[in-house]
Image 1 (cartoon, rainbow, N blue to C red):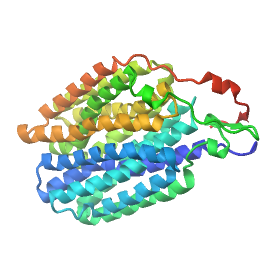
Image 2: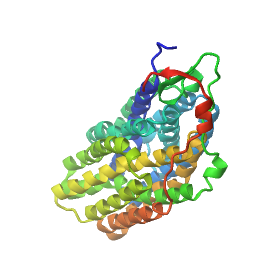
Image 3: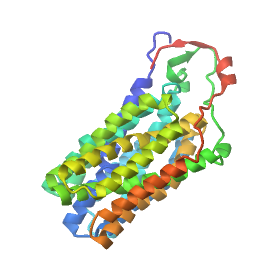
Image 4: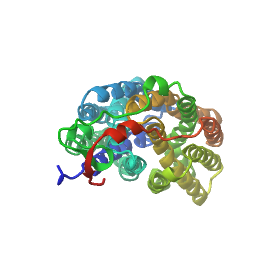
Length: 421
């Protein structure tokens, strides 16, 4: 065992690739599909935005059950099942010619994202790292943004070139190749089963590895910190996802189709840079204050976007918006893992996201409806900015994010060394 290499980095790399694939073709890709259905079918923006609402509601509800499954079974089995279901739904997406078909396909698609996306990957990485958790989660969740940089523009180009009906089966193959083999061969469900401890220490022979420690779910979910953070994220994510899902159409209206193809790339690229920087800084900063600052900055960028008609000004606000996206998504998992520990992380994260789905699902529909009513993106993005600022205010009420430690367990456990990770 002394010569064995700590698998943590390989696990992070596998989770990164999986998130890159699923987010690039679902979370970020929804904006592309919205634009395609609007152009090809002539459906109203609010009716298509409702499909995004169905997607996020379904993924939030299913995510709660996914967390229970990965707590009981090998996470890879759940993730592979989700990856296959997601590929089937994506292949069928271009065949939707009625709104009810679109809603049904999006509900199935949501299972694929929920079972092979953020909840299982961040749960697995949280098990593998403690002192290096923020950086590991930053690298993992950067896959979200890289997917938006690499795969979403390809999806946009392909759907524009050949139509969504022909593009979606090709995208489904990309989804399948980027998930199933990666999950099977690179992701390992937990370090303890392989004789390791988080961060690269391994247990002496004949010593049973301890179970992960952390705050009990029943205690944690009733705390002021958990509830304030969750409500804050409902508001902040309503603003973020609502703004993100409309960004391709907004950019196409104001700057043309070529600029629109680069809008998600710009958001995702800035998200990558900001998330990696934030992952290294967050342990040195007051975490709650950092999250509050992100909510305020995101709100300001959305309000400025409402009035940005010149291309350079629009892309300037898009870059600021992208920087906040990178760290806001990261901070939810970091705050929960840091403050409550690993034991019930999956359940706590999934329950928080179940409530946050009110925002992620309602935001796109709200902004789409406001656009249909007003005929402009000014009012929708002003409202989105106000929601984000309100979320920042609620986040400030959560209190300090102190680190959970089980000192008794740490002092009693003999370890044989640390291989790094």
